[in-house]
Image (cartoon, rainbow, N blue to C red; front, side, top):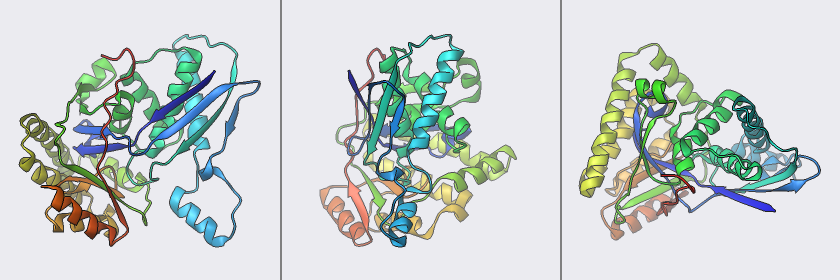
Length: 341
């Protein structure tokens, strides 16, 4: 039996980066790109490397390009951590697994280290394959928690639940990470959304920039835990922006969305200005120069926003591509896992 599982990149429409700080967000996944895992039974447990895991290079420049694109670590560490945490989970829950081994390989075309949750997509696809192979049941909310523990607890990657929730549900989700609610239930308050099909949303990302999110989140977490007033106020405002965007979506008031998305980014600059690079800021400014709204999809490298009409979208593409910035219309995924209500 050959098992194939997929997970898609995530775009945070509004509210980020408050998901790691008991805020509110709306996010979705889109099928323009994907991470795929293939798993099949074998005598030994074997993890096969992908393109980003090789260690042989044609030249110094080749190595330099590889590190700038993928960082110093490939995807094998993600798979190892995912399998280890999956095994931890089954032992903690008293789930006895059979003794079969497997070979697992992955591939992904999700643009790397650009705020599209490419790493968590690999982990999500991996755990989905393990669940199917061993016949273990798990709700999407539990899957999101497990994926977060892989990255945060096993690998020390600063992260919040938003990416993993959207990828686990395969559906647009309104997420409320209210602290008392999470303490009682162990998960956030997640509500599935039907985004209007006419929603004029775009995603753009730089092809000459790849950054991790560690610097932003490390500093932001320190300030949040220290109770810095402007950071606490920002978290409350991001949550309020999320509720306003949800209301605008329900009313299909697309004109109202642009200023709310713009404010999300501007507030980030006010609180975390030093962590917003020149190229990232330029990307937002270029999009806004043609009248589109723009904010980060995650922690930088890619933006999301709205546009007025097709003419504006085409002008947006012309301006962005002149600066090596790719533009797409996201194909939003509406595909709940089996048994998910």
